[in-house]
Image (tube, rainbow, N blue to C red):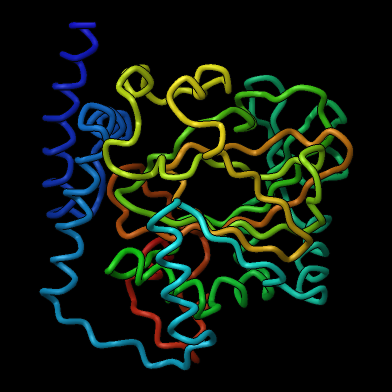
Length: 332
């Protein structure tokens, strides 16, 4: 235990140095993520709260102007969504995406390259048609997704921008886009994120999960999370000192109430917005394939490696909306 704590302390020093380096060079030092995660675990999340406060103050100091686009939901609904995420970690909006847009997204699946998982290895394929049956999780290529018009339209929905900006109290940055197909499997697997875990790549972020097919029962592989577990000091040291590991249900519920587990069921088009620093997982689908589009926004690029998109900012931007330039920080 003492050795583990000593390693965590060294990680703290490296993380603080890494943040100062990031502020001056606008890039992360090598292997910063392990130190970033360890610092979070040592402080039970307080480190991220401090980073977020600094980012928020920096944004306020710059005195950014308000955004000049029409809000698509009224301010009271928006505030309720933010309030629910702050309180529980997630908020769900049924019937977010209509069937026409869902079909346009589904049409992409057969056209783009993908990665798939077998065992503990990740393989690449030029088409989902060439993915072997034993692969139970398939992820479409992110850069190819970003070239698709329907994906651009969804990402530029002002709803996402407004929710993320109000939650961060600073500029949201697009940091990840994914479309995952989870095939039927008998048992959950760690590599496929089907055991409870928390994410930790940036100081603060939100993920927007859109079901592309009906997820009506637990056999359809719904997303699950533990309410309130995103809050600072909410995670027990006995779990955090293990580091960034998947956790079996039996062990997790020694520390959290089973009643605080939320299983997100919904029809195709359902949107779940989550702070995935909370414990969460996707159940393995046991009776039919599950398809989910995921879009992530973060308040900073600090904390993990920055892999720039090979899509130009000018080709991707939607000039109709006055999104701040930092939104496109990962684009060339």
